[in-house]
Image (cartoon, one colour):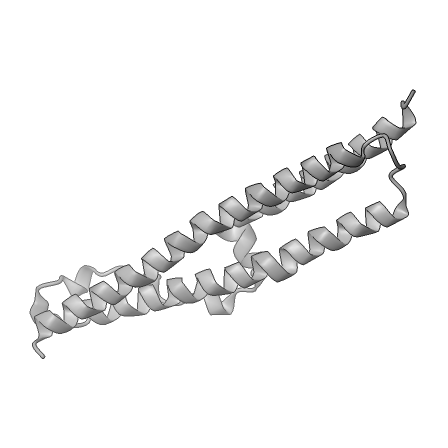
Length: 156
Protein backbone atom coordinates (compact mmCIF):
# COMPACT_ATOMS: atom_id res chain seq x y z
CA UNK A 1 0.00 0.00 0.00
CA UNK A 2 1.45 3.34 -1.01
CA UNK A 3 1.63 6.36 1.24
CA UNK A 4 -0.99 8.12 -0.87
CA UNK A 5 -3.39 5.17 -0.44
CA UNK A 6 -2.75 5.14 3.32
CA UNK A 7 -3.44 8.85 3.52
CA UNK A 8 -6.67 8.47 1.51
CA UNK A 9 -7.73 5.60 3.75
CA UNK A 10 -7.13 7.63 6.91
CA UNK A 11 -9.00 10.61 5.50
CA UNK A 12 -11.93 8.37 4.50
CA UNK A 13 -12.02 6.91 8.01
CA UNK A 14 -12.01 10.44 9.44
CA UNK A 15 -14.91 11.36 7.14
CA UNK A 16 -16.88 8.29 8.24
CA UNK A 17 -16.41 9.23 11.90
CA UNK A 18 -17.62 12.77 11.14
CA UNK A 19 -20.65 11.36 9.27
CA UNK A 20 -21.47 9.18 12.28
CA UNK A 21 -21.32 12.24 14.52
CA UNK A 22 -23.54 14.27 12.14
CA UNK A 23 -26.18 11.53 11.88
CA UNK A 24 -26.30 11.13 15.64
CA UNK A 25 -26.65 14.90 16.09
CA UNK A 26 -29.65 14.96 13.73
CA UNK A 27 -31.36 12.17 15.66
CA UNK A 28 -30.44 13.81 18.97
CA UNK A 29 -32.30 17.02 18.11
CA UNK A 30 -35.33 15.20 16.69
CA UNK A 31 -35.70 13.12 19.83
CA UNK A 32 -35.23 16.16 22.05
CA UNK A 33 -37.96 18.01 20.14
CA UNK A 34 -40.22 14.96 20.49
CA UNK A 35 -39.56 14.86 24.24
CA UNK A 36 -40.37 18.54 24.66
CA UNK A 37 -43.52 18.19 22.58
CA UNK A 38 -44.56 15.11 24.55
CA UNK A 39 -44.09 16.92 27.86
CA UNK A 40 -46.19 19.86 26.68
CA UNK A 41 -48.85 17.59 25.15
CA UNK A 42 -49.14 15.54 28.35
CA UNK A 43 -49.26 18.69 30.44
CA UNK A 44 -52.05 20.09 28.28
CA UNK A 45 -53.99 16.85 28.68
CA UNK A 46 -53.93 16.87 32.47
CA UNK A 47 -53.88 20.63 33.15
CA UNK A 48 -56.77 21.66 35.37
CA UNK A 49 -57.85 18.08 36.07
CA UNK A 50 -55.41 17.24 38.85
CA UNK A 51 -53.19 19.44 41.01
CA UNK A 52 -49.45 19.71 40.49
CA UNK A 53 -48.52 17.73 43.58
CA UNK A 54 -45.20 16.50 44.89
CA UNK A 55 -45.35 13.34 42.78
CA UNK A 56 -45.44 15.45 39.60
CA UNK A 57 -42.49 17.49 40.78
CA UNK A 58 -40.53 14.35 41.66
CA UNK A 59 -41.51 12.78 38.34
CA UNK A 60 -40.33 15.81 36.40
CA UNK A 61 -37.08 15.93 38.37
CA UNK A 62 -36.53 12.21 37.69
CA UNK A 63 -37.29 12.76 33.99
CA UNK A 64 -34.80 15.61 33.85
CA UNK A 65 -32.02 13.62 35.52
CA UNK A 66 -32.71 10.59 33.33
CA UNK A 67 -32.58 12.81 30.25
CA UNK A 68 -29.29 14.41 31.25
CA UNK A 69 -27.42 11.50 32.81
CA UNK A 70 -28.69 8.61 30.71
CA UNK A 71 -29.56 10.06 27.30
CA UNK A 72 -27.26 13.08 26.92
CA UNK A 73 -24.35 11.49 28.77
CA UNK A 74 -24.52 8.52 26.40
CA UNK A 75 -24.64 10.85 23.42
CA UNK A 76 -21.68 12.80 24.77
CA UNK A 77 -19.67 9.58 25.10
CA UNK A 78 -20.50 8.46 21.56
CA UNK A 79 -19.82 11.91 20.09
CA UNK A 80 -16.59 12.12 22.05
CA UNK A 81 -15.45 8.77 20.66
CA UNK A 82 -16.24 9.84 17.10
CA UNK A 83 -14.31 13.09 17.54
CA UNK A 84 -11.33 11.29 19.04
CA UNK A 85 -11.09 8.77 16.22
CA UNK A 86 -11.66 11.48 13.59
CA UNK A 87 -8.75 13.45 15.05
CA UNK A 88 -6.56 10.34 15.28
CA UNK A 89 -7.21 9.46 11.62
CA UNK A 90 -6.50 13.02 10.49
CA UNK A 91 -3.33 13.07 12.54
CA UNK A 92 -2.20 9.77 11.02
CA UNK A 93 -2.83 11.10 7.53
CA UNK A 94 -0.87 14.25 8.26
CA UNK A 95 2.08 12.26 9.58
CA UNK A 96 2.69 10.62 6.18
CA UNK A 97 5.43 12.91 4.81
CA UNK A 98 5.42 11.73 1.19
CA UNK A 99 1.83 12.81 0.54
CA UNK A 100 2.63 16.48 0.30
CA UNK A 101 1.02 17.86 3.44
CA UNK A 102 2.88 20.63 5.20
CA UNK A 103 3.36 18.88 8.52
CA UNK A 104 5.45 21.73 9.94
CA UNK A 105 2.41 24.02 9.80
CA UNK A 106 0.00 21.41 11.15
CA UNK A 107 -2.01 22.63 14.12
CA UNK A 108 -1.26 20.25 17.00
CA UNK A 109 -4.20 21.59 18.97
CA UNK A 110 -6.27 18.81 17.41
CA UNK A 111 -4.68 16.33 19.81
CA UNK A 112 -7.01 14.36 21.97
CA UNK A 113 -8.30 16.56 24.76
CA UNK A 114 -11.72 15.10 25.37
CA UNK A 115 -10.69 12.26 27.66
CA UNK A 116 -9.01 14.72 30.04
CA UNK A 117 -12.21 16.67 30.57
CA UNK A 118 -15.32 15.57 32.37
CA UNK A 119 -18.89 15.74 31.11
CA UNK A 120 -19.76 19.10 32.66
CA UNK A 121 -16.42 20.75 31.87
CA UNK A 122 -16.89 19.73 28.25
CA UNK A 123 -20.46 21.10 28.25
CA UNK A 124 -19.42 24.45 29.60
CA UNK A 125 -16.38 24.86 27.34
CA UNK A 126 -17.32 23.46 23.97
CA UNK A 127 -20.70 21.84 23.61
CA UNK A 128 -23.24 24.64 23.43
CA UNK A 129 -25.77 22.39 21.63
CA UNK A 130 -25.95 19.85 24.44
CA UNK A 131 -25.96 22.56 27.09
CA UNK A 132 -28.82 24.31 25.29
CA UNK A 133 -30.80 21.05 25.23
CA UNK A 134 -30.36 20.72 28.99
CA UNK A 135 -31.49 24.31 29.56
CA UNK A 136 -34.47 24.01 27.20
CA UNK A 137 -35.56 20.77 28.87
CA UNK A 138 -35.31 22.41 32.27
CA UNK A 139 -37.35 25.37 30.98
CA UNK A 140 -40.04 23.12 29.45
CA UNK A 141 -40.37 21.10 32.65
CA UNK A 142 -40.55 24.24 34.79
CA UNK A 143 -43.17 25.83 32.55
CA UNK A 144 -45.16 22.59 32.54
CA UNK A 145 -45.23 22.49 36.33
CA UNK A 146 -46.25 26.15 36.44
CA UNK A 147 -48.95 25.46 33.85
CA UNK A 148 -50.29 22.55 35.91
CA UNK A 149 -50.32 24.64 39.06
CA UNK A 150 -52.02 27.65 37.49
CA UNK A 151 -54.56 25.61 35.56
CA UNK A 152 -55.70 23.85 38.73
CA UNK A 153 -55.51 26.97 40.92
CA UNK A 154 -57.67 29.07 38.59
CA UNK A 155 -60.01 26.27 37.56
CA UNK A 156 -63.60 27.33 37.51
